Length: 355
Length: 164
Image (cartoon, rainbow over all chains, first blue to last red; front, side):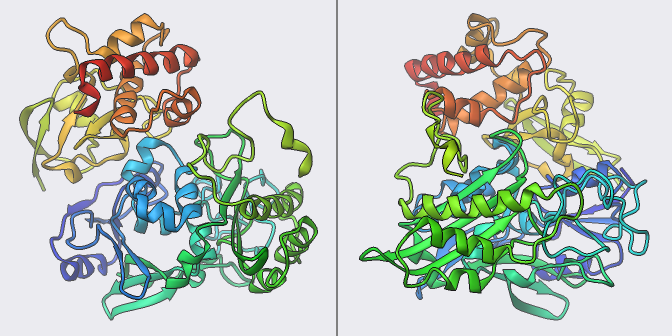
């Protein structure tokens, strides 16, 4: 780890002034930043500890039915807040399917949104990486690509965004609250993570010195509470990043879907959502074929970035399955293995076949 | 730039001058406070050997800058026993054979304590395995660990300690 100056500002203005200096990095839970500093990927000159800034650690229900979550709210506190988990069950399930109990206690909302890709080549300072060092190339192309993108990638970068939390947040149309040297602004979460294109490797849409202060879920986001699921395929059923994950939420009345939300994780450099796929479900009755058609529309144009074509099939199957699970109703209690496609009881694994 | 921090470690106040801001809580506990029960495994938040409670929550002390923990109350494995009387969780790990080489055990026990205090252990083996998945045991004593958490939780409930 490089040597750095550590400062702990007591006000947002002071933090932004420090964060806007060249080479500064904001520190919240540290679970990603410190790790990247230890392996030499991040080398900040100044670490600006924002964990004690006032007013960023509450979960509030606003008068219009929206919910605001402060950037310093811990993943575990949010997932276990019973009002929050009842209103947004797929978000709670996604949070609890990510990382470990220890990491969820340390990680905060703002840091999770700012989480870097887990691409092994990004994490190796000796490998070419346009995201880490623009213009150097992409060592992942032609390398180990199981965790890499199958949609929305370019020759600049094939990395995926690793967050579970962001997938249902994207489906729910969350709005990110940002403060910076030029004041405050709101950014739809869909615009927070930039896809790579022919000229750039993508990354975060924040400007130098900006930091996330909170996140709002719009009033309509609580309307999906009865039919919501997050499912996640990974190499082991706990404490692993997603190969593919899916958040599905439905608003159903009298057996008819009035509104649907669907987003995938693990397939692109941002949570992958397409309004046209959701529109296909509006006004239909829950049905496996319609769900599969929506999943296909969501992944239309997908193309392997390496030896990862299987992820395209997995993504469509998982999106279909997540919609089916959502249509069955939100589980009354959080499953023992959050986001698992398998039932908890090892004696009853009868639903392998329906993929 | 020297940073002065103070920690309450196992109930005792420790005032520490940090010459190097890179020190993690793990390093400070082991090298400055002299409590070597907390282990350094991967040093990257992946193995759980460094688990301690900070203000009652279990975290990976290797991924926490000591400077950032200024003022925190820290509980390490050394803070559990009362003299020669083992904490019920420590006794349960022995009784259930919840370890082999023992290197991961302090982290396992601190993680179990955190899990129980979070109210999530629920005596359901599946929920315990899920809740303990941040602690790797390379000897693979997982069956004994799960059993130890159930036994320890029961003993703590009987003595009212799980509510602390």
